Length: 419
Image (cartoon, one colour):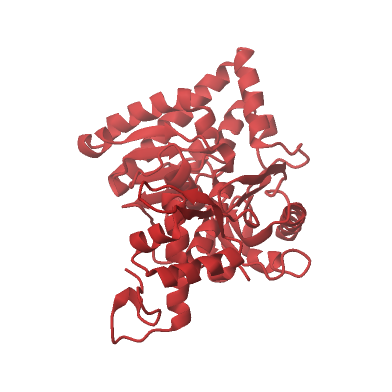
């Protein structure tokens, strides 16, 4: 319970003075979140349901309206005698969250307003694996600038930008410590995007792509609300986002979930991280492409830049033409997927393993193989209660999750939107 009669006291605790601005910010968040979670409410209903007094609610609502976050939508009939109150609802049509993703073969942009209406959804082919980090950052900045321009033309203010990257992130500085498949080491992503020529004054954060995708799945995906789940990216590299007890598992340094670099075959292929036999060398999209169309494998110089959807389309065309390598390769990936999943189940005991990226596209053939291997290798208790599910968010899960992080920040601190 937050302050009721006096904004100096959090939780209604009398005799414990607190910073008034901090308490007001918490109460603004309380009202905004309540409308987000429960839908339109009158001021009277907000006061009754949040425990704030009516005078405080009126003041808070006035400020949220001034910030463009709340609007009146008409009378609300609650079944009581007397004149109905005016209902309030999230507005946010002038406030946007921008999520970006840079991956091996594409850069994506996804923006929504506070009411989660999609404002833009792009994916542009780009060979980040073969480009220098500075070149990749310039391309990312170009797309960010274009997105900012599109949103400005819609009359929308960007509340923040979050960038998804497949690697280890130093969150406080927005620096990519290492992203093996991008060949990035110590790349200052946030600093580049916060530059005067891109998004000056806009908060920029950077996070791991699998973690962001896992948050998207937990909130709006096929396993939404499942408090214990593992998300697997299904990209060139394989990252994992782990939700346990309804919270993202980050680890001591925020590096938890790098499941693709668990060593599974000491005699296997060399990985982009420099080691040998990592799980992603067995199940990543690069492994599938290498087995089916080795002359167009990732990392070859002079190749045509292809979006992952285009590569999958070519693989499907080869299967339709009778190429036996396709089914053999998919079966091999499925078996290794199940073997790795058995380890994840033993470590995290999830209810669902959500398959993203290309895994989701081939789920009809991958899941039976993976489930059989999981059942064979896993302990009967945990594995028997865990199932695979194909993501419906496709290759856009990370950028959606990135935008969602910005929205969460606005709901937590409405004062980040200027008056």
